[in-house]
Length: 200
Image (cartoon, rainbow, N blue to C red; front, top):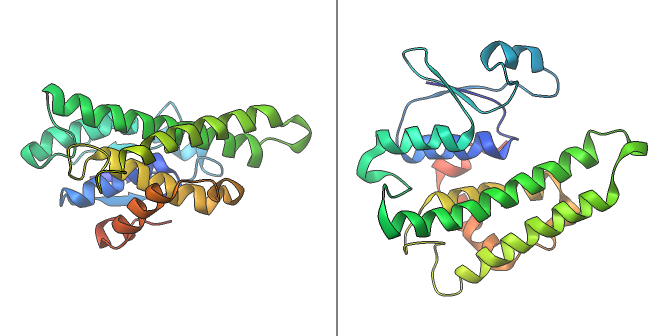
């Protein structure tokens, strides 16, 4: 399999980490949406990453859709339960982590890519505030467990840990407001080579 997109993108990286946890063989194709957009569009007409090219040539897009496929392939080892209350619990935590990721990336692009005179500062502040609110909610879930759901590693933990790394690399002013238990979760995963090896 080939994973298209740079590890700087937390959406790409959550897929990469999951591939590693599942022990699946894959190759990184580190194209940048900023400087290599045309090449990405040759793979994915939407011009978005991640895109995952399966061994048979089929192409999947959107990190959540890709992960759904990988979970199916992983079977009982999947980071997301297939059904029932367990799936709903893990999904709730993952959605808050993914929502925080989406808000953070939106704030990053508004602040780093848009010409300064056109930046919407209040919009950036709103995106950051919303992301931090979601991280505080996740932090509360860690009061009684080392994990965000089900007392074990799930996609919620992977997505949250990847987001914390992205914030520290790309949004240093925001990093000081990330809650401590969420940082500790990332630090635990950082000691695992399957996670650490994907760092940008």
